[in-house]
Length: 306
Ligand code: ADP
Image (cartoon, rainbow, N blue to C red; front, side, top):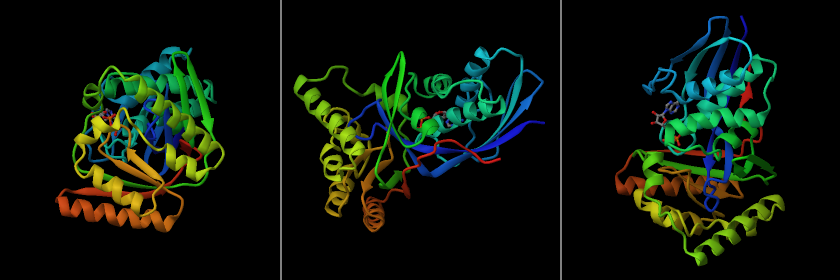
């Protein structure tokens, strides 16, 4: 029996100014999955977590990704997938991407890497379509490639892995649900040219700052004048978290993916720990439940562990 166990990391999509085109993989939290290659055609999905996610193949994002994978594979084979979900669904930390990306990386490993990593991104995007209504790769690509990824284009797929200096990431996940599909719907369809110009400057600045390990440039470029002003309304305490985190030394930060999680980047661990505490204080005052994480960039992506 051929089987594989993997860890699949949480990811932060958008990275403030890079709506739909930038993403970063995290060392924590990570989902665990086990995939068995079977002679019996079809896909069977089991969950060992308490999240009550759909087991039906066409309703589970991992199922949607594996169906796309099997569609292009030459032989009739099947998979038995067990998911232990650690990344809370709907957190804005790429829970759906971890399942779809993890499933296809595991399947490819069992088939001696028959497909390229780009193919895997393509298959896994079917899972994102199921979760949010549109194909996007800003969680999937960093989940599979690790590190920070630029998605220059998805049709045709053009992915660029960016080098990035060490960064600490502090995350607060308020326990409210923001559906990715809703968070997309509230966005304006048109952008003012002056806002677009600001955003282009910030994206170029952020990418350059990452490549040159220029923390000041990274910090100056972590600004979103298009999406954040609208989406942040859905997140209680957002402005306070951002203001106080910056005062405590954060380089900057914003909404993780479509929220509700909020993340802040720092150069030093002590700063990121202080930010965790101030985030907790703010939410304790608001009286809203939350989870926090302090973590770092995951440079390796989905990991085969046995
Ligand atoms: P996130 O940013 O945390 O991935 P999304 O809203 O994009 O949040 O995705 C979560 C949605 O996808 C939920 O509605 C959930 O029910 C659905 N879903 C289906 N299968 C899975 C899966 N295997 N893992 C996570 N979410 C799944």
